[in-house]
Image 1: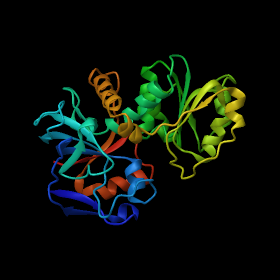
Image 2: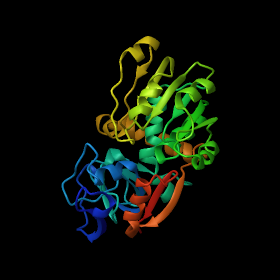
Image 3: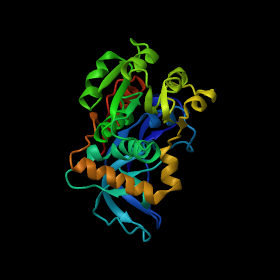
Length: 325
């Protein structure tokens, strides 16, 4: 099979197109003929050696794919050969064939195409897990999302809007404000122009943020830790800015707010049943038109390096998707 291979942890430059044997599914796995695979910041971190997981080299990058189930292990009951599916794993999606664990594979509903479907398991499932299951977001609460124009951030804006929250979207540059407003942000903070702390106080009337979906880390996280509302929920999702912050614990103590970690990949492995059902819930909302994945552009598999460079340059709104077959 044709596949993108990462030959060193050197970023996009280390990606090559090559040929590998077709994988064989184990009894608890599904072999997916991949039609579309989404490109994420997590994929970029992994090929650059900046992620906590380092696969043996060379390896095939890509966490999320959509396609057709071609072979199904004997222990997998909910998927049959020929089903349209989405599947996720730590890597392996940028190829013509991908093997995924049965509990990381979901049937794709009618009305959701392969391109959109390939973006769901990492983006909207993270937003669902964070906002519904971890934070218990309530209608009318102030939800602040950093990195709001990216794939996961935009899904959180969309999910928050659907749940009735008042969404504050933080974007890096002014040209990204339009897309987050289109997806339901009531207020937008442009980090290169605005004072983050002052704007949050102004927008919330001094009350602060009830739920913070925070993906940048560093000083942004520490600033937001000082503008949380009473009984708020501050959720570290990732550290795209490159710095893991150290939180003075008097801050959550003084306002009785919680710091709630969100790591969707670990949840998939630790609680596979609930995690799989959560993806089904998200897919149902998308099929019903209540949530709308944003695809920035579709590129051929051979342009995987270019796709990664776009993510690296923060030039993507939503997701880039690789068309495989």
